[in-house]
Length: 307
Image (cartoon, rainbow, N blue to C red):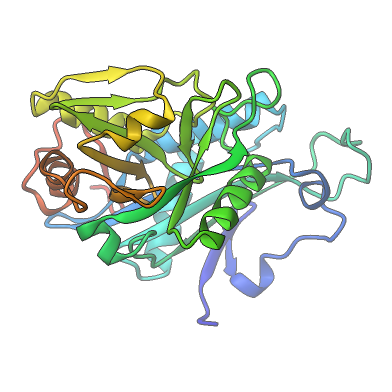
């Protein structure tokens, strides 16, 4: 493994020193929250995409699970910049992680203040593959449903929620697909294993609402705003499975997935069986933020090396 540096509990340390105890509460009970954040190389140097929004959601997630965080937002912001800089990265995937440490066994932590915070950064390409970005991925509706409301908060980015994602992903792989989609408790579309879902029909963009047991993705919000800029009508509403089969275009969004077209669902071709024109326009607008062809009118790009 290539040696790299991790920000761990307030210090930059070699990755081999960023260790945790096997008694850590998060290992036994899933008491962790995290974010995925991308830094991109731009004409103005490396920029971290919507860093503040991601870190605010991280602190919100910790608050919901009553995990105290001893580092404030400015400290975490600088830590993200530092971990990109010290590792000599121009583009990167960042993983801030807050988790309960060795506070004793038992579902209820015995010491609420035993909390570790780590931030990692490493190179990472297209999550579902470069070919998938260009021509689309194959997906299927799996038998696994997302958590019902008032069971666990789907809008919180907690480690334990992603056990559901693993089951969805494994079933999709078993069926020869690149990714899986889950239904909600009501039998309507929720989201992918680690992505939000969009559908395009007759020039209108549809996406399930936040109440559909989805994570309210930051890339999802970005695409909603870019779509409005481009003049596309956008509707947030419940979607049924069969509506996806009749869609002109489908695509995923997410920090890892970015904007990834879907060319096949349940072995049914989507539209013409490749990336559609609306998806391409949204991809161009999204990736244009990083090559300078889309104006960053909302200040979404935060410099690694601020002046």
